[in-house]
Amino acid sequence: MSWWKEAVFYHIYPKSFYDSNGDGIGDIGGIIQKLDYLNGTPDSLGIDAIWLSPVYPSPMVDGGYDVANYIDIDPMFGTLDTFSLLIKEAHKRDIKIIMDLVINHTSDKHPWFIESSSSRDNPKSDWYIWKNPEDQKPPNKWLSAFGGSAWKFNEDRNQYYLHSFAKEMPDLNWRNPEVKEEIFKSIRFWLDLGVDGFRLDVVNYYVKDIEFRNNPSYFYKSLRAYDCQVHIYDRNRPETHEILKDFRKLLDSYTDRVSIGEVFQPPPGSSKLPAAFYGEKSDELHLNFNFAFTYCKWNPIQFMEAIVAWEKSLKSSDWPTYFLSNHDFKRHISRYGNGNNAIPRAKIAALMLLTLKGTPFLYYGEELGMLSERIPYKKIQDPAGKKYWPIFPGRDISRLPMCWENGLNAGFSTVEPWLPINQEYHKTNVKTEAKSRKSLLTFYKKLIAIRKKYDSLRIGSFEPIDLDSERIMAYLRKIDKKEQMLILLNFSDKKDKFILENRPIPLRNAQVIFSTHKREDSGINIAIIHLEPYEGTIVKLE
Ligand code: NOJ
Image (cartoon, rainbow, N blue to C red; front, side, top):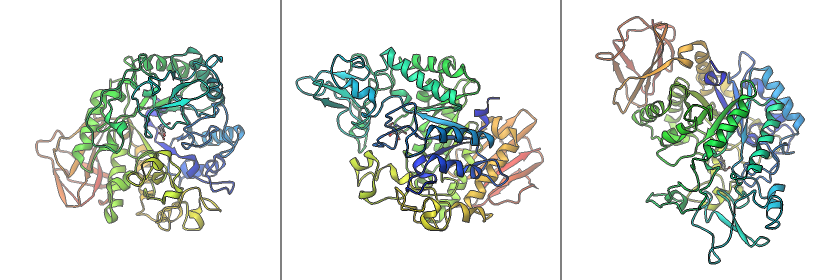
């Protein structure tokens, strides 16, 4: 079984994890210092792989997603030596390191773009997407995800260039074989250094329509005009799959490396789109993110529909992935919880995430229950946040510094951090929660340990139990008759019961192996299982 099918991934936003050099910004040295928190000691969280948001040299217009050099590390984060040390120290603790590969666009400060924009006849003139004006206007109606037209006029060339995101992030021309060759060289550079794989940023955006046709529009209630276009011409082009097949061949020429595609999709998040990026012959990406969960309301029926659709869209050779939070969305604890129900709901969500069939991705701080919190306009760093404020508070709300302890700057830094500290840091922090048996952190640690202990929870089949209930979600994870788990999740604040009658589980002995409420390692009669409000329980069927 491939390691990445059984692994728990942990996503780190490097500027916000731990500041080791006292400049208020998280760095690679900081991650190295905190590796024991993640794995390698009996008290660690127990994760198996880190996905690191970009650490390449960057003007940081978009938090590093604007790359100015593909084969170096930004001095803000460290050096290539610090990065090599991170790989070495992580591997010692059985943690893999996955980098973010941001190759739809570069920074406008990348030497390739500086050269490309200098004239129409330089050697890199065709490395980006340049078009002549149409009646002195942009060549078509494509929009930037960060607002306004996707085209920016350049006086030196008297032409427009395409930017799917900020104007400082020009899109590369993937129809040019030289671009591909140069990017593939950089990929080899990191693989040779020992990274275990890549998360591919906006992988469905690489290739654009050769005729630059306008997208059809459709009615959708959104703040962004961008969401009112059906993006069939500026993303999701079939040619992308050819690039990914070659990328996969390159990756497979190394041992045990993994790829995860960010297949961004508008609500409700169709599972067919990410499924396509595994490749018709499972010869493209190993894993792909499906955004369906980020669009689900707190309702087990909605989650179950998303899971079943994902399972149905994948071939038997493909493997699902699940996540609830990342650096682009409001954290799920803040989407679903409000006051007293936040932690109970976060526990139910974690139990689901870590017992589904598929690779789970956690986002730093979710194990503590860190909230997404609005910050004052003058502190906003996110370009999308500045554009749409105050209606949209920006993505910084989910990028606040990790809370390590109830002390100065929550133990993140000795000086004022680059973004404010969460208001509840005095109780929501690693040190305080590690001491409490009831904390969310202790809950995640135990849950990850249970997942490690029982094969069925990692690699067993998934069988939903169709309850059609707005309150309870139930499913089985099985390895034939060898090991069978029944997972029951009460999403509601009311007591309820799960009745076995007419359900596809033969009556037999059973044991509670993990529960928010019940005594663990105790026998249970499964004919009727009473559930407390927000109870989650894993029952092992003997
Ligand atoms: C997706 C990344 O997750 C997001 O943070 C970034 O702004 C865009 N891609 C552009 O790279």
